[in-house]
Length: 160
Image 1 (cartoon, one colour):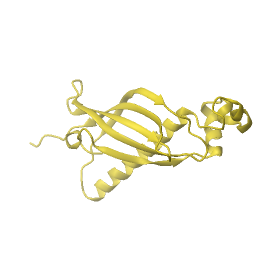
Image 2 (image 1 turned 60 degrees about the vertical axis):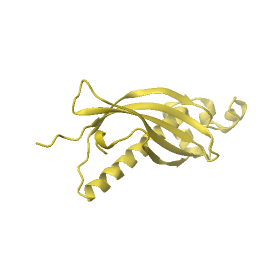
Image 3 (image 1 turned 120 degrees about the vertical axis):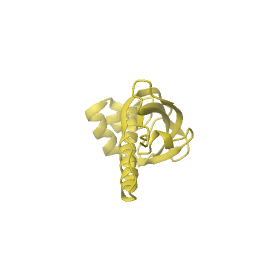
Image 4 (image 1 turned 180 degrees about the vertical axis):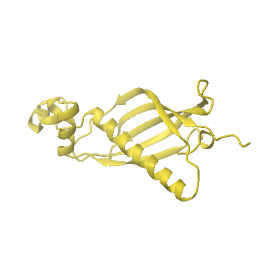
């Protein structure tokens, strides 16, 4: 993770791509969102979605997994170069979560996060707050999800 001082508004990271499969959609739904249009193809056809689709919570959870993997790889690469790694977290929440379109079986979602705001923390002076707008678009470029998250990020230590 970069230090707060090295992050700029407008910085973008392409967190990754995920292709949603029927088995995965059903597995997630059985555990966390057991609505019939996430569980059963025939029921889904009769629903307002018209076909089996992923839970919105599933699309958000996939982003979280990709985000963690991306940040771990970024930190591992920085460590290999001998660079210090900033602490981040905890996350303070998500706002303006929107699901624009359903994610169907076979859809490939590309997740992108862009720094939308930065400010020094009043309560934790060694940290800043980073606000990030995350979006997911399908293989046709159609937005399917967006949200804003806020996370603490360590500021670069002052040199003695």
